[in-house]
Image 1 (spheres, rainbow, N blue to C red):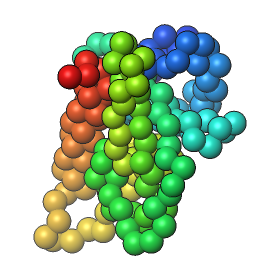
Image 2: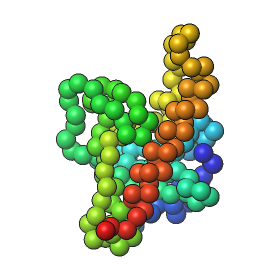
Image 3: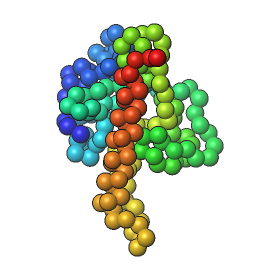
Length: 164
């Protein structure tokens, strides 16, 4: 991911309510290893239901304000729709996002299950056990990155499209 600063992140928000981008808390950008991120995702420490993610779509940053469901998955396991990683159910949350523009102002939204901490970029980089039958770790990571980017572009595209 290309590095970004606070004003760029705030300006990238495509579905934030008026004034929300100016008020949203930013993560510690000095701590971000940009080369190991497909997107920047963070939760609002002042509001348990708010989250944000920013990614690049072609050469334009796209920021999406998210709202976490108040109902959490409790038992079993779940799979994040972005990183495609199975985890305990409590670590995956349904997030909704208002659509951008007029569609969002009319109340249209989209939703998907995402890692509750919005840290998919970190999760896909966990080392895998080495076995003869598994692909090389670098090949596996490249496949995970490609899949995450594809699913992120799809979700972002749904936020950006007009409601039918």
